[in-house]
Length: 119
Image (cartoon, rainbow, N blue to C red; front, side, top):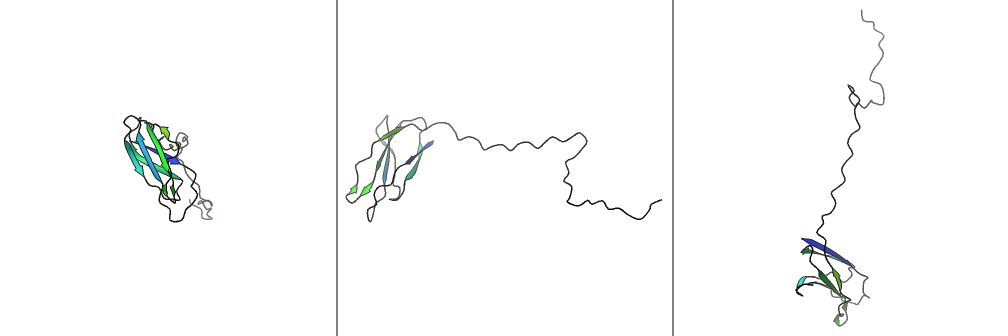
């Protein structure tokens, strides 16, 4: 499955606005593939559950005092079948010299001199 994200410039606010009306049509069949109603103050919407590699037309209608405007110029798009890139991989730890283990020295030396003599 694929998704598309649509962005637009907000329409002039009208008191008591209805939400926007976003319609996605399958270009091959002409049928409605999805509809969503983004909030009246929204400027973006994501439509999910679309078939990857299929061509769609997106129509956006803004709310106005009469209900809805005519659909804005339709935009054709084909969602990609590619997956998002994998997360970055952490770099490997630095190599350790032969016979030496990595060790963090404390701020003060833990070795203390002793005045006692051992025979």
